Image (tube, rainbow over all chains, first blue to last red; front, side, top):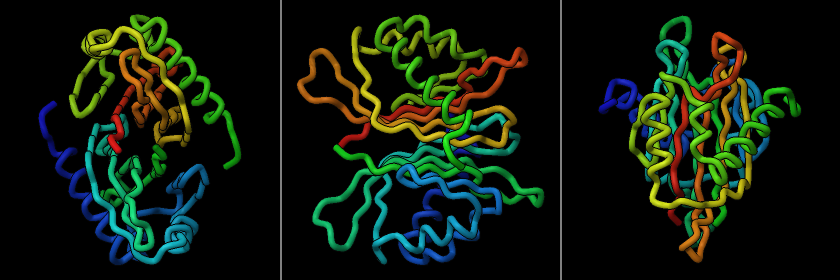
Length: 126
Length: 126
C-alpha cells in the first residue's frame, strides 16, 4: 500500500479544508451535503445547514490549523476515502496551541464529486 | 441523533477491544479479516495475519489504555459504524501516559458479525 491516488486526494483535501477553515470559513459549506454528519467535541450535528452554522458560530473568528499527520485508507464504499488528521490549532487569544485530531469520510456524490459524509473533531487535552 | 444502537455497540466494541489489547493481545485477531487495514503511526498493514503480527510485536508486552472519549457515527455502508477514540496509553516503563487517538470502521461480514475494516492509530505528541 504505497502512496496511491486516495492518499494524494486525501492530503489535497486536508490542505483545502483547513485553508478554507482558516481564511474563508463560510465556503466550507460547499464540502458538506444534506446528510453529512459532524460530531464536534461530542456535539452531533446533521446536515450541511446546521454544520455550516456551527462552524461559523465557533467562539473565535480567526484561527490557524497546523497539520502534523495525515493518514488515509480506502473505505468499503467505492471511491470513498477515510482521512485521519492530527495537528495543532492556534487561536488568536491563546498563547499555547491546542492539539486536535479529526477524521473525515469522503464519499462520492451521484455527480462524482467527493463530499464529507462523516466528520468527527476532538481537541486532545494533555 | 441521541444515543442510538450504533453508539451503544460502538462503545461496547471499544471496551472489548482495549480489554483484549491490554490483557489478551493475540485474541485481537478475531476482530480483523483478510481485507482489514491498519495504519499504525503511519505504517500501513493489510490483512488480519500481518495486523496480528504487528500488534504482537509492539515493543511492550503490557500496557493499559485509558479511554477519554468515544464518538460514533453510522457510515454509508449499511450496518457499519465509524468510531473515533481519544485516550491515554500507560506503558510499564514510562512515568507519563502517552495521549493517543484511534479510529475504527466496523463493517458487517456476510455472516452479519461486525469486524474492523479500517483502523488508524496515532500517538499525539504534545
